[in-house]
Length: 307
Image (tube, rainbow, N blue to C red):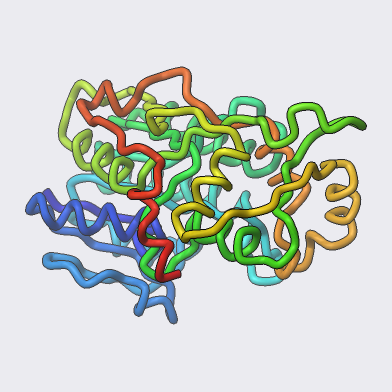
């Protein structure tokens, strides 16, 4: 099968490309000018230069393919560079669905995100809008909603590498975030980190399975872990013990009001809001696809030792 991929140079996309190649599929990837070095070297992969906002480039990427995977997602906006949730997570996705339908490509896979039903932030709202557009498209769609994703980043942005750099390696204590005035259950909110290779496997397994058409899969690891447990595991994986202290979100959020427009500030108000809401799955999406999820433990985090 020939697969057109929008967003194939990112963390998850690079793993999906490798998995598709291993299964004998060929791919065509839309690559922004200047990002050619981010494309993994795999057999049967062609690159099309362009941006998701360029209809001709998207059409060139998709023309002649049998299926399309849309992976673009961002964590924060840079409006001055045209990097916004609406442009990339909603309008880019909708444009891809429309062009795919015009070209007669019926199979469409979308990477969304777990926990977006609250629609409490622009990130969640645009992800949800893309899902709704795909469901209304008339295409044979499958949607994936992963929790936080971890795994070897190969030089790309990744959840645990970021936490190691920003919190574990930093000289100050790591923050155990809490809401309200008193540090009750600081750092107790739950996440279910899912391994990137399990996410890639979910995409590849569902690609030509008719039973996955019209399905949404929540993708989580085997355990729901507290923020404190996650930081402790990351620290142990690199041979450290990290001091942690309660940190009121109210104070950090106040600083973010002034500073989160700057890329050097580590977290935005919306990111804090989504983090404190937790991120676990009600649906065993990996199990439904016959995938046994990898645990979040020191062995699985061995890649951090060289980070």
